[in-house]
Amino acid sequence: MTLPFSRLAALILIFASLIALPAIAAGKSPVVLELFTSQGCSSCPPADQILGNYAGADDVIPLSFHVDYWDYIGWKDTFASKVTTARQYDYAKSLGQRNVYTPQLVIDGQKHIVGSDERGLRSAISQAKSQHTNDTLIKVQDAGGVLKLDVIGARNGPCEAWLFAIDRRHDVAVQRGENSGNKLAYTNVVRDVHLLGRWDGGARSFEIRHDDISMAKRDGYVIVVQSKGQGPVLAAARHWLN
Image 1 (tube, helix red, strand yellow):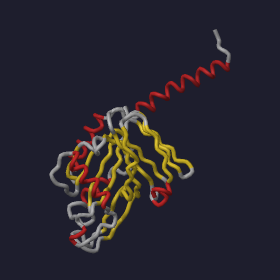
Image 2 (tube, rainbow, N blue to C red):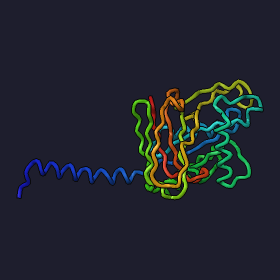
Image 3 (tube, rainbow, N blue to C red):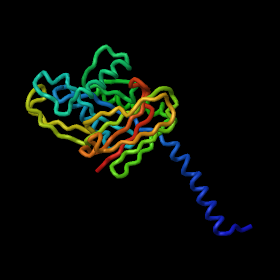
Image 4 (cartoon, rainbow, N blue to C red):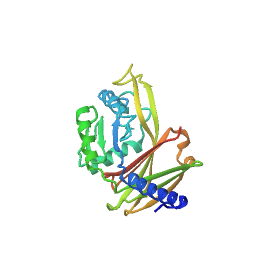
């Protein structure tokens, strides 16, 4: 039996949508790498370079968080802030650390290693990928200067959503301190940190104006949803503005 063209076309569209839906649902979140670094730390440049190697990766989101507790030794980090430093101290609590250090690399909010340990990083990324599920997804819409976020899933208990405004790259000529005379390159530098909200799990939506969070001055943003108390990362998304 031959179907009428209109009915056949409708069935093709339905079939195509059924194929597309699993593809969207099956997509796993990128691995989030949070490097806590400082322009005043002589041990940090190798870690900064390693992080930069992942700048073009689709399955990894590298982020540079600059801390301020080394400013006293001669050079004030131009990107450091109390809020980025506080994030590292909060990880110390959630990961059971007694002290903070640089360069520290936190992988998916679950594990930390020395940022210059390239072999350890590759292993940690591979392990994180093997543990990823598609239970939580982030849908991002950016229209007319308004950022709309839909968190789908997040049924793993209380969770929180963070937005990081980032710059793609910065080159800094350090004039004093341990790195005096060196020009250092930084990737995906976090310039603003915003806690969007905490809730008890399940679906959640957010709407943010770029002007309200200084997004217009930055290159893009990263949204991270993780278990409450800066626990394991459940999902992440990245979007460039220019």
